[in-house]
View 1 (cartoon, one colour):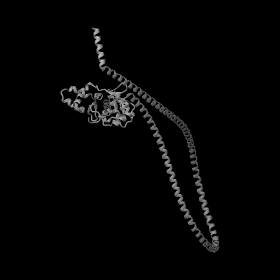
View 2 (cartoon, helix red, strand yellow):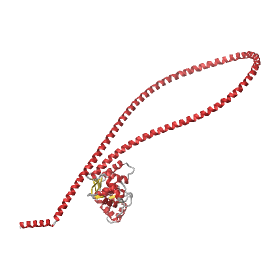
View 3 (cartoon, one colour):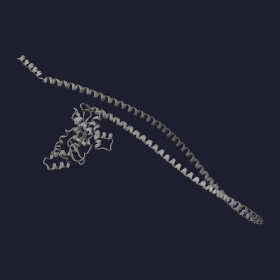
View 4 (cartoon, helix red, strand yellow):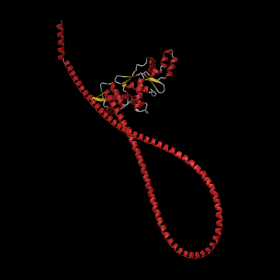
Length: 466
């Protein structure tokens, strides 16, 4: 049958047809492997439960196992017989075309108009190209896990099978090895060896095992999430420390470069000091000669300057007096203009001072309100911090209690499984003893002496009646 299955309903029909009865926990891995790969295990389980409850072709038994109702709708029997004859998928258009060409149009019209009835009929599945096929057509057993195929073989033969017999049955569905089958039988506790290499399957033990594994995986996921959060927090701390180490390293490099530059500058400074000492010696000798010439010239210049200075003083005093008068007049005019301008500015500054005082009062009020709000927020944040710390302690306490409960449940489940094994072995021993006694009695009845006694007693009973 070419083409992929159209929807989740068709995948569930195919799976339940092959395995006959399955729980939701057993169906979810098949669906997750076939479709809905982007969803989590819990989301797939919700969708599977919703689909099983909505479609009437899926039936739940008293033990909580789901099965497929293959009786179907009687209105679809004609379409079912057509698909059985053709052994190929058909589309609704082909059915309409054959219906218009045939004489009995009234019989085919209800078949075509009821596509919703085909979806709720367990005998039909829809492909992704719009074609319809039968659920009983060839099932791809390779898409199911080896564990489920081994369970299927034990459900077909509930009396028990050896590892070789299980391998032969499963190998007809998909290629495998005897070692893989033996590993599966030894791995899971719901497969039990009852003696002489015969293995049986216990559904109740599997339900308890799946429930226990679901709890264990849930606790592991919670621990994994907590580990990821701790890992992210430590990673951030390591990044901060690395940045600090890089900053310290760069500071060390800068100080080393500064020390090297300082050593070079100190060497250059010593060289320059020695050169300056030599030059200072020469300059001191030259200065002494220049000082002698300067003293002689200074004496001559002093005499000439004293004469010129006295002349210039008189001229300067006359000019300064005139300039002082004109400067005082200008200063008087400027002072009057500046006083008027200063008076106007003083008035403006007084108005601005009033406005600034009013603004300062408003700003002080706003600042006081904001400080009060900030203090209230600080108090609230402290309370929230205390609450979060208390919640964290309570969650940690709850997680520890859950771990203790899970460990106790696991111990009780293991003890119940051991008790069930012991009771089963005792019943098997009783059964073997009764079978041996039955064989001995059969062998005793087969002996000729017993047969002669039986014939004699029957003959005597007949003579008494006569």
